[in-house]
Length: 105
Image (cartoon, rainbow, N blue to C red; front, side, top):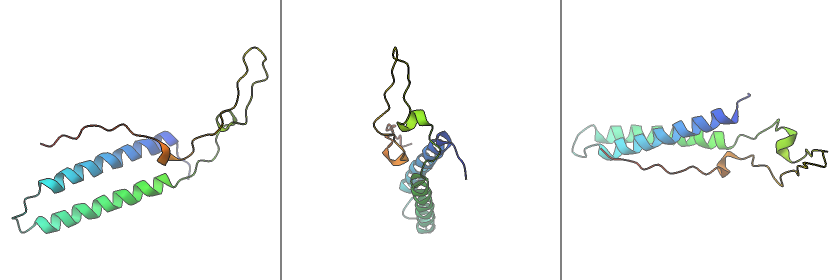
């Protein structure tokens, strides 16, 4: 299956957002209701599914990296030489996300 890295990052953002929303909903469930345990269990199951999806995305290896990004490409021009990068980041797990504040209503 072919997918663009940008699409995978977008999907990871969606998964993170959904996980945060489910956590907020879980925290807001009243303990004294008879349906509370069922809702919490359902939300936990969904959060687990999201984590599994996230881990599957993070396991994907990147293939077909252009030469100029993989460190194999060098420009032959003497006026503007380009040295290859020492290593290419191919793992989505290495990407850092900026933390956004979570508001409770």
